[in-house]
Image 1 (spheres, one colour):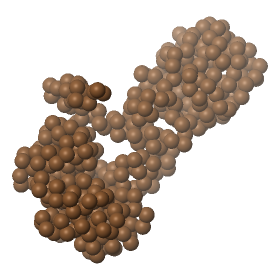
Image 2 (cartoon, one colour; image 1 turned 135 degrees about the vertical axis):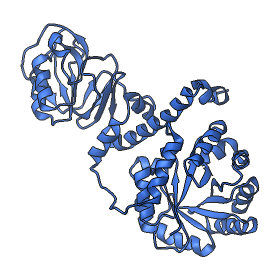
Image 3 (cartoon, rainbow, N blue to C red; image 1 turned 60 degrees about the vertical axis):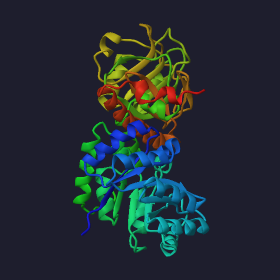
Image 4 (cartoon, helix red, strand yellow; image 1 turned 90 degrees about the horizontal axis):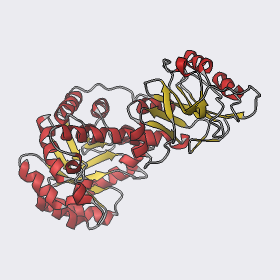
Length: 428
């Protein structure tokens, strides 16, 4: 059996960083190096020439994502040193045919990228008939963020064509092994390698996984469990970045708990320290939820104290947030349940029962609804709208992985401004 090909995509905009990553991934066992679309758009064919010059014996893939002028773009990539050129499968047939002619003329292979194709099985067969050499079962990054799966696309395409099928999009070692077990001849990895702090070791791990794949059913995880698992991997700062600096609460101090607070919101509207609805919300909440209380910006009377916090701790509530005051800090400070508030006072209100549980509220500058996701840590608290929680969680993981590589380059002696090439990318 022919070993699967491991193709590593340099999906970064900076050629200076791509040099090191390419060398490290080849040391870990990569077969092909892909000049990713961000790098091609940033550096042009210069990137293909430079990586080819640094690694003359390694097949170079130019991810042109061609949608027009098929012959011209294939010619450009081939003359720059690419051995495989990527074209969008959804391109017009005339573009595909011209690209195939140029590929045959210059002795390179053409890879059809199935991203966004409405009927991938039919289109894959059409591409094969037109002379495309490789079909790429690719789900793009933005599609991955909303839950589309490259392995599901691969399963649909496997066996429908006689040419090699590649798999790309959100693959790590485990999913790459599944891709090979389900028929992928080429496994394309981007973020799981290039965003790693140890590129060589990450490549080696994936190389080992795909060389000894085990076919398993694609695991199905509930959406809420997946969101929680992903948020456990990131920080509130990562989530804020993923949300383009939106969702952060203001004015909070963390009074208890040292761990991460993650859960879905149980909202409480109360007034003037009335602690009836806040305490009743403990019984409404499930383990893992976060109780979010708006005390209408009254910081003179506390609607929450030690006994309520102890009740939450016993029940497994993930945390408490109060736009207002908390009391009994001598006892609360040593508790493990994360508790955030905007003030502390000794005064307690009366349990009159005014207010509402699970109504839409405004807390510390953010609108919060029942079921919205909350993440809190030492940096603060961010509210994630429930309808976008899966996408934002995935994007936050991507942010965190990107930082892993940047952190490693800084550890090696660079600085943040150099790694990010700030002078080059500053607005003029």
